[in-house]
Amino acid sequence: MPEVFTQNTWTAGELFEHLQRRGELRVLDVRNRDEFEKLRIEGPGVHAVNFPYFEMLESGGEDDMLDAVVACVRRELADQLPKSAPVLAVCAKGETSEFVSQGLRRLGYASMSLAGGMKAWGEHYEARLVGDAPGLQIYQISRPARGCLSYFLVSEGHAIVIDPLRHVGPYLSLLHEAKCTIDAIIDTHGHADHISGGRAISDAPYFLHPYDAIHPIDMVPATFSYEPMRAGQIFRIGKHQLEVIHVPGHTLGMVALKLGDRYLFTGDTIFIHSVSRPDLGGKADAWAPLHAHSLRRLVGLPEEITVLPGHFSSMDEMDDGGRFQASLSKLKRDNESLRVLQQESDAGFVQYLMGSLPKFIPEYVEIKRVNCGLASPSEEEAATLETGKNVCALSQAYTAA
Image (cartoon, rainbow, N blue to C red; front, side, top):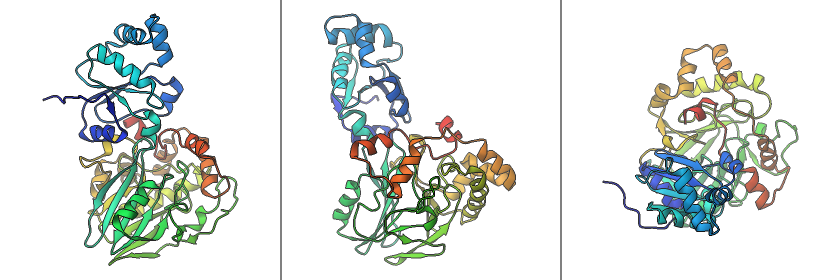
């Protein structure tokens, strides 16, 4: 039985719930084409159409703007927007899309407007319980629009935060709900795709591998204080232990964190559909062989361990509970990059890595500067730097999506 939609507006949270259900959805995005290319709504069952608002008015050819929208949809978009599926109208901040959605409803569409527009979607976070080991809760905090993942671990009134994202509100909310104290904040590496919130959440000790406390291109050391991580280091939380595994390749200071044989926080090493790229430090030739060696170490861990990655490339990696996770055995079977790793020699896999690099994102150089404390962008500048999806995986992850 098809869903019945009576709302005229969806929040970003309601959009995420619809994507989680994998319901069919048509998106009419009326932003400029360059904005649409940088970031759009994607997911299972989603078909997005971009038709800029001012082009709609021109195409509609009517003096009244609502009449022009109606005429444009009827003339230009009827084939791309069948009435068998709901249509979500989207603009930059949620103002123009309300007007467009009104025109769609006049034509008989089940249409909603995205409240707050793509700005709200780009800043939306979701928290899901992904693990519940004895006396320990593991929350996965996602930023769906960018494909970024972070983790909040709670046990016996204490917490550890892994790879916190720029907006600290979701972490402070969990901190308040759990009535706990943060003992440690860990960045698995010096991030290039997003600005870390690690030093903004609290005054808890902030941990980073010292190799990543240096900007890899500028070779300038970080300007802030931090606690250096080392291979084999143990973080205790309740009765559980997180072991640091140094896995250079995506960055020189990349680490994974192993919680017994139950969970593996892989940061930017292994993802659900792919593995990470080795070129964001500008040294792919040198880092790719390190990456191959590190990945072989990780795939040699117990196969029943659950992988909790630092990113996802597409929403179809999400399970029915809105979480991004998989057993290592499943990834060794289904992840294309890990299949190649198991089939090829180190030299063959390095060749595969070097032949699968996506386009370099120039903003990533500046984001790394920010994460080393070498630059302090305004909120507007930070939002601009973070525009678009993360591109931390190999190219085949995005073509598959």
